[in-house]
Length: 194
Image (cartoon, rainbow, N blue to C red; front, top):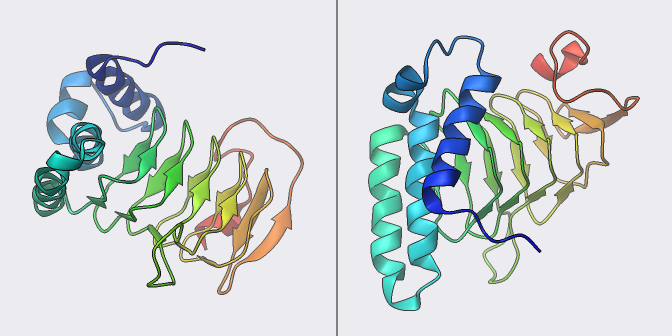
């Protein structure tokens, strides 16, 4: 088992992930100063560490709300986010308290990892590694989105999505695809943008 990364190492990874995944990123300084999705993830990393200490839950929640006001991205400090998450454009992204997000995930603006129940317990989605969630997509409830899956723009996902599949439409329909390289617009199904 590897030791957990130090906070500064995680923040650098987040910065590098944004630079790697956004062809418009010209420099690390530009990303560090001007990318609200990166800022939201950075604040989440601090708030999540606070959230793990029961006496700091209220300050963690307030910090997350300040980040929401500043970035337009709402990430509950109780959510569990993996490494190298990239939130492109940011505005309108919502990640609920019991959501779990794997490594190397991309969330586009307006996407929601939300609940559909008011009961306590697991009520938000779990995303595997390498998942791409298109603009405006809604993934609702305690569903599983498998490794390498893609959720199309404006899709509404209310059932599990298998690994390496594409979910498009309202409600989302599953399209299976052959295993491909990680998200690459040159090889991926254009239906995810419709």
